[in-house]
Length: 537
Image 1 (tube, rainbow, N blue to C red):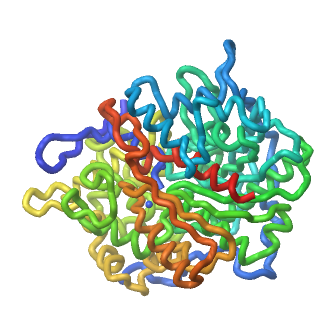
Image 2: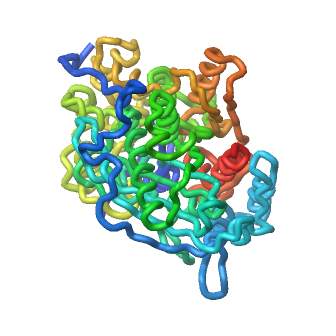
Image 3: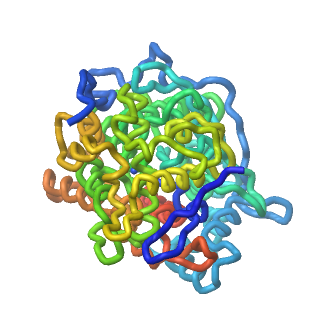
């Protein structure tokens, strides 16, 4: 049995961290150590460089794809993508009033008047009856330039190639659970397991798009490597573009799709930053478009962490609360607070694995060295928990709980006279000071700065989409990126779209209707993104 202990909260009482699990399944579902290390930059730097390492097989299909075929429409004998989507946004436990609000908000201009009463998925305008959910393995290049075999999912509608609207490259949100990835397509039934792959097959592929969804290095089928989390956007963006290359080979060989396709790039949370970076790579090197046989039409990140060195660090080191909330958080005292140890540990542990710097030089020992009070495993430290332990169902929840419990061991969030959820005690004093003071000599800070993805001038249309209030990835990221684009190119093809949380309702951890927040937004805002793709043909 895996135990996750209760975490004390302000005002008395306890909140079981495991009960917060679903809130975090889609986290961005975020003067020491100098040496001779240098930050890892984007893998493509100039228009002359080849976009892919063909000698190492980058973007090549590996093995035999597996295929699951979904019906678009539900029949008396078979559940379809239409019922899967309806049950996702209107589960039976949700009140009729909340469900009606969800449906009415989708049936608006911003969401392309997606009228569920007309069954736009099962009775779609292209007459698509089936969607293939294909899992592939392909070759990507890791940070050390070694070739690795990784996985991903592709949703392919059964429609004539001439009717395809285009190809969507989607980068998913944060997870430590290797099976919580888009390629883990689920059969549709009363107890369907939610995955991004099944959702986007329903919302995007049923409408005529091929959807390409990388699982990332270190996740999915790749169990031998650490996921290069968040401070390595170039490598994750590159692996996504390599998957498009593999997908184009599959489309040619098995679906007779050969022609030029419009390309739309999007991503959610962690993946939002990778989406913007992928567009930047393509802008810097025309070889991507020619080799992939695509024309980039729009980049539309959802709730992305674009400003890691500015907004990201400032948010993590801030004692956010209901009464002191400059970050536009919907739930600062629970969701924002609980996410901080999980995200901080993931960022630093991944960096430690790839930089060669010991995690104990960056993380406080009471945070890093685990004990069975927080998680009943044989794990000695957080590195084991995040990257090497045997995983089990709801593993993300266990990691979230362990990180939060270990954080309390440092005095974080539990000081009765000086309460603070700032991450300062989770770090060694030298690293905490270096990050807070933005010490450019510090190798971790250098890498964080190199992970900012918005500091360029896009020549392609960009729309930055986020909730008005977000408890995990503050919408300030979108504000900063949009302001930067406008400053560099006033009147450029840029938009920022903020969506009111009260437009949509989900079930909270107690079974009551609650406004949508960061980790529950994708089923709703994927329809807004669909409208953006449809209106940019």
